[in-house]
Image 1: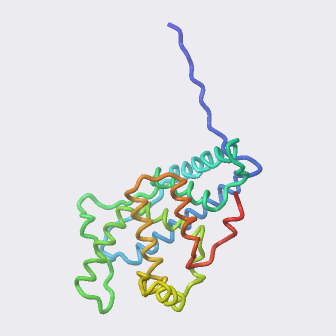
Image 2: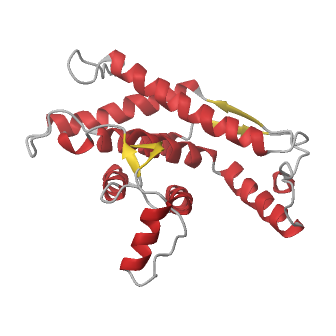
Image 3: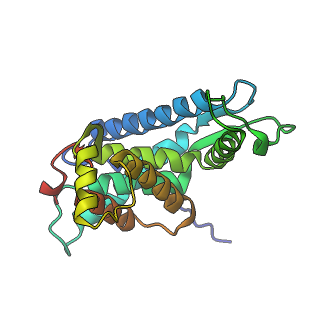
Length: 235
């Protein structure tokens, strides 16, 4: 019987021009920082009695970076476009897309614990109904930690949310120009709605990098916050 052998080896995705090891390390550090931001926010809100722990699968994190680079390399190497270097929209889109495919964040809790009963720290002056609503929201978020991290990744890769462009007065002008039809009282309310809607899309909608890219581009048409860079100047 003839034996046929299959050769396999690791794929070298890095180069010395665009997709360098240093650049991949920067993306990795950014993703980890995004995770830590979400993690710290979640732990800050959860009640101390909730026995939930979070961790990141390092192997899946590495695959996220590698698969994102492979996807972007196809665009750069294609003869059907003139892209020489992926812009910020593409980078954020491919990193978040593959993060959502691999879902590196793991939420761990004992077998005896019912995650649906997770509680949050109480806020002074809130009603029982408000508290119960916050608890339900936290339970939903616990199930979608990877989506929360992906939202953090893409929004802060494009926007500097600490530098507001449109303030309360700008919001009022929008209302007047549209016959008081603007659906938000402040741009902070709009930001919260964007985060909620984007998390929903990441959790329940069929995704592709180009869809994420176009959504981020649309958010910059009338930004409420300064951009982190000259995103539209690239390819």
